[in-house]
Image (tube, rainbow, N blue to C red):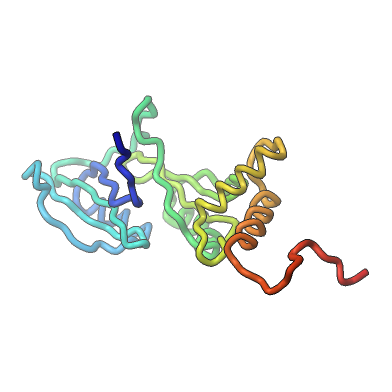
Length: 194
């Protein structure tokens, strides 16, 4: 028996209301280019909208112009989607609260998650959305996930409650040492100011 190895998210599809509400939110609020549409090939009375969230992957929305937006928060039962998180740059993150406030969109305010900062709000259909910004940049050739794995190992090793800046910093140092060669025989910590 073998695994079915995934290689990333292909797309996420949500049930929307009318076409224009979806375009206004996904492109008009979150800036995701509306790249194409076609009928829902399984349900002919629905339309299928496709948006690029910024990494070339897809967020797709099934719409029907007979459906009205309902802002009631989506249920949080077992097996239900809790939230979708999108990556934003540090510069964008510093503007999220202001830009949501300008539209009158209620939000959580800034949340420090140890390895990232986040702001939460609901889309027009009650789905919880998170805009997140990593607190670190991984070394060249290393992914964010690899840094987080290494930081987790350090956190557990040190019996700390959650990942913090020191775990991230030390993880990046360890990964840099592993992935980047040096002519130095001794790459240990030095103090040249003594």
